[in-house]
Every structure is written in structure tokens, then in C-alpha cells.
Image (cartoon, rainbow, N blue to C red):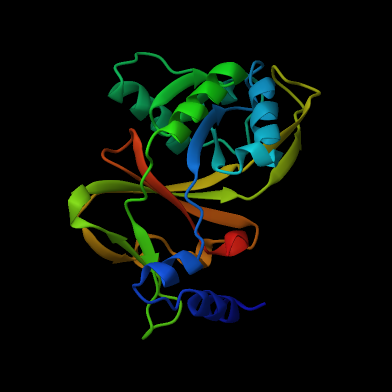
Length: 251
């Protein structure tokens, strides 16, 4: 399938009116966000990697989206994680600064931008997810289409929420199996799920409508990748809303 044809099909799917019925027809995913900060060079990370991989396959977590952020501060120990990025380490540090923490660690799971947990602690992570489910989550944005320009999807932020920061996260949809040859996990074969490949952040967007294509270059989304748009009040922090966008494998 060519990119032009794919975008035309996406545009056709997004020909929506502003009625509630047509908006629900798109059936966009609005998941609870689980951010796992991990590394192939971290000896205590494989149990957390296994946990989130199992979570992604379990129908009991169908309302949850795991995002694997591979940090780069373990790379000096003899094995460079090919998925690591300083950008992801900086995101974890920003979370720490916001909450007054002086240190960061792996594996760490952050649930909905608000609960900070050891990534392998299944009991605590499940309790946090249950707490989010019990809260009244409300999607504070909507994705709409343009009848005059197919494929030009818009995101709308209502006046009621004020300025917001937006993280656009691109991730490899599904599993990646890696054999680690050196470092603390030498000889291990580990499965990673939804590995983040890029993070784009926009700070203090005012209420209104924005072309998603202006926030992120959609031709950069490969067929095995997805985009999720995450809205929060600061650079990092408690998440207001999250929507998986209908591009790539997630269309």
C-alpha cells in the first residue's frame, strides 16, 4: 500500500461530523498510560520487562497502554542498549524533579503520570491501575476530520482545560526480542513490548484546534509503529488524557 493511498484511507475514516454518534464511530483508544523506564544494561530490569510484556497480552489490561522508555545511563557498563536515548532519560529526570526526588532508577513504572513504582512490583502496579480505573477519567480532547482536506486530522482542546503540554510518543507496536551479548545481562534473551522510538513534546498549547500533521510529521510513522498523544498540565506530570492516533499499525 502506498503512503498516499494509506493517508486517503485514513482520511476517509476521519470524515466525521461533530455529533456524538459520529465521534464515537471512530472508536479511538483512550488508555491508561504505563511508562516503564528500563535498560538492557540493567540486571534487575528483565522481571519488569516480562511483567509489562505479559500485561500487553492479557485481556484484563485491554484499557492499559505500556510504553517502554529505554534510558541511556546504563550504557557505560559494557553493553549499549540499541533502543536507549538521552531524551528518555531526561523525561525520567523531569518526573523526578517535579516530585522533589533526587535520584532515578530502573526499572521504574509511572502510572498515568502520577504513581511512581518499582517496575517489577506487580502488586503495587496493579493497585495503582485499579485506582486509576476507579477515578472518573475524562477524555479532554477529541480527534476530528476535515471534509475539505482528506487525511488532515485535527485535535481539539476545549477552553475549559486551559493551556496544556502534549507528548507525542511513537512506539514499535508489539514485541521485540533481543539477545544481550555483554554487560550485566550477558547471554540473556529478553522480550520488550511497545518500545518507544521517538518522543516529541509541545509545551503550553492554548485551547483550540491543531492539525496533527503540524504537531508531528505523519510520514515518519512506519507500518509497524503507533502514535499516542498524551496531554498533561506541565512538561511531565499527571496525565489528563491519552489517545492512540489512527496511523501506522494503529489505524
